[in-house]
Length: 229
Image (cartoon, rainbow, N blue to C red; front, top):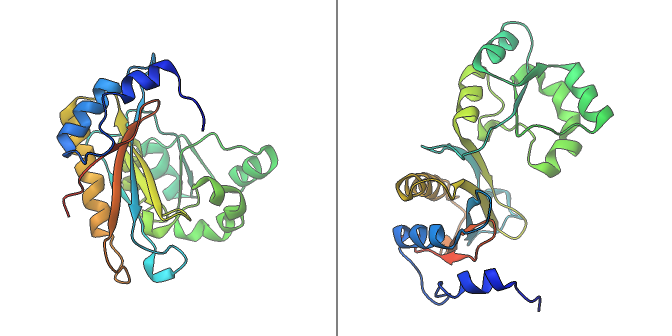
């Protein structure tokens, strides 16, 4: 078993790992234990009672966090003509078509956080799935990143829209802000993501849907939270 550092042991001693905390208590405790010398990211981790191997039990979507994630989001858009102009006006960092495809494939360029595409560009973007897919960057209609409303998609991404998706272990990991956020801001973002995950419950899910929910900071211990189902 890997030995933890002295700092971690000290902050972990403040957490009762057998206890399931109320959301506001957990967030208050998280801020108390986020003592690194940088602004730690706060994340939520859901273990769901679904089976990602079945198509009717997939959980995927997106939600706009009320207070954003606390980090600058770089957005690229595959669009042409008026849609390209719309993307630039909305604040997209890079807009293009074949030139972006060549940059990604030729230079292994992945210096961006969100990829948006108009539907007519998906024939060009599709082959990038082998590059973008493993990084969770492939545009998807369910996440609102394949759309004709380019302006709204870019603005929401810049404002703090995050995508959530089930991994192979039936877990969802999502950032909800920074340790420097106020407790109220973190609680608002916590509730926004929790509500979205609950609403995304697939019809094929049986038994307990959210089996466990933890929040954690980058360098801190996981804190178990009551999802209030």
